[in-house]
Image 1 (tube, rainbow, N blue to C red):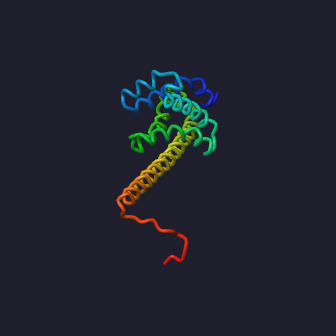
Image 2 (cartoon, rainbow, N blue to C red):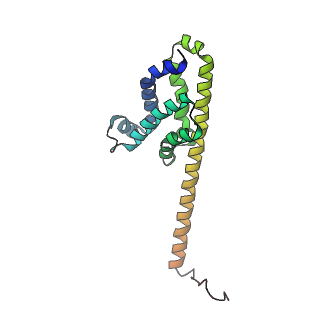
Image 3 (cartoon, rainbow, N blue to C red):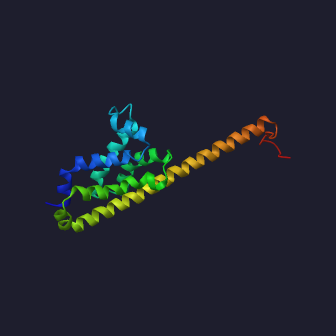
Length: 174
């Protein structure tokens, strides 16, 4: 038996604990709702998070490539990026998987699979860095959107106030 086989047996419990801890990072009322509401249409955040975590658990064991990890991680991080999470809060749930896995294993297994655990934890760290890249990209897009919106609003106000005169781009330009 190897580490992946042993943890595959514990997948449901690990993913459940990982989901609970991830959801616990939201404000208390939101967290309660996300945990209790099972309807995916009434609770798309909870559904997206749970499905993404299940897929990420499998991806980390299969050694999936960056694009695959991004496809599962992006929806979770994108949701967290538009909320009031700091970068560490938005991506910290990824690293909690290492602790959860170790808590679910007995000490003998940790010693027996130490090399495999090291490799697994390295892949989780890489996944965390990917998550931070996604978060940074999302926040950059939000900042660009806000700047464009502010610029357009100011331009519109100046135009209504008569401070900007539209000129024709055709003609001699003089």
